[in-house]
Image (cartoon, rainbow, N blue to C red; front, side):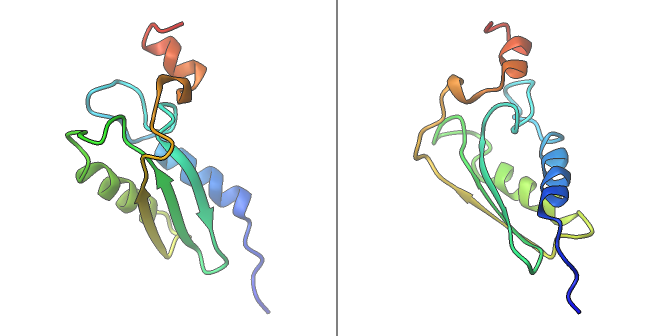
Amino acid sequence: MTEEINTEEMGEKIVKVLKTIYDPEIPVDIYELGLIYDVMVNTDYDVKILMTLTTPNCPVAESLPREVEERVKSLDTVKDCEVEITFDPPWTQDLMSEEARLELGLL
């Protein structure tokens, strides 16, 4: 008998972890910044995260995706995590949550 995977609950746990990771140049977490485009979980508890960076020349272009991968993998239910970086569509301030814009004085 296979255990039914609760992707919604797992997704919430992943988002909670993503909200603990901050862009070093902006005092807002990467989730509220709008850097996370998609989080996919399959039935083998493998996670794939599609994310972007504020710019292609971002100083943390190598370390930030690795940090995301390691933090998500630290969840008990996650077997593996792959982070894919994309610049399509490019990140803009429009992708930020209202909370993030408020925090940065953009509202």
